[in-house]
Length: 381
Image (cartoon, rainbow, N blue to C red):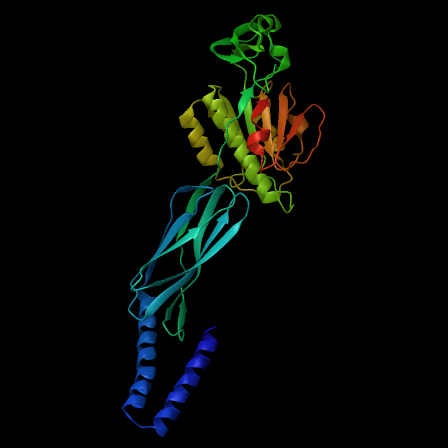
C-alpha cells in the first residue's frame, strides 16, 4: 500500500514539475511548492511523533453478550501532520473467537473508539497490533510495539431453571440431618404442599390431597443439609464447526443452574479445570455474593483439546470428597471418564451440542443453544 502511494506521489510530482516548465506562472509555482512542502512537513512530523508518542488502550471490565464493548485508543504526543493507525483485536479465551477493528488517531482526533461485539460469553483479551505512526500522505510509516492489553468479561444471558433434587439412594433418613427451612427429598419428612407444575416428580404427588382439592398437589420433602450438589464444566474442545456455540451453551447452562440453586437457597459447589495452573478450581456457593464471585472466575476459563476430561481432573484433585453428591456436568460433548463420578452419586450430563447420546448409569439431557431456556426450564438432578 505504501509503495503504491509513493509511486502515485512520484507520478504527481513529475506531472507538477512538467506543468511548471510548460507554464511558469504563480499558480504552477504554488502547486509545486505545496506538493513538496506539505508532504515533507508531514513526514517530519511523523518521524518526530514516532519517538514521543504514547498509546493507551481502555475498555470496560464487563459487558453483556448481546451488547458491544466500546473500547478506545488514545495517542498522546502526536504532532499535526501525523497519524496513528492500529488494529484492535479481541480473542475469546473460552472459544478462541477472534474479532478485529481498524482504528486511526490524529492530533485533531486523539481518541478513537471501536466497538467489539463478542458472539459468545467468556473473557476476551484485547490488544493492539499493526500499530504505526505515518504521515497524512502515506509516504512514511514507523511501526510501533504496543504492550497494552485489557480483558473484558462477556456475561451470557442467564435463564431461570426450576430445580428439584431427586432422591439419592446413598442418603438415608437415619444418617443425615434435615433442613426445616428448605424443601428437598427426605422421604420421611414433609416440608409442605403445593400445586403440581410440569417437571415435578410423579412420585411426589399426594393423591389423597389432590382428590380433595380437585387439583394435583405435590409434597415438598425435607432437604438433607449434608447432601452435596456439584456442578462441573467441561471445557475440552471437540474440533467441530459448532464447538464455540456448544461451549457457550455449556457455560450459560452452568451459570444459570448456579444462580437458580442460589435463589432456591441450595448450597452447591462449582468446578472446572484451570488450564493455567493445570489443576481443578472448585468453589462453594452459599449466597448471591459467592455466586457472583464464582461467575467472574469461571468466565475466565480457557478451552483447549485435552485428553484429561473434567471427570478425570475432578477425580484426580478431589478423590472421594463428593461421594453421594448430586452431580451435574455441563459439557459440549459427552466427556470421558463419567464412571469416575459414579461413587454413589446421581450424575446428570447436560449436553450442549444437542446430540442424543446415552451412558450407562448417567442421565444425559441434550439441549440446544437456541432453545436452552425452554428445554431446561424444569430439571431434576
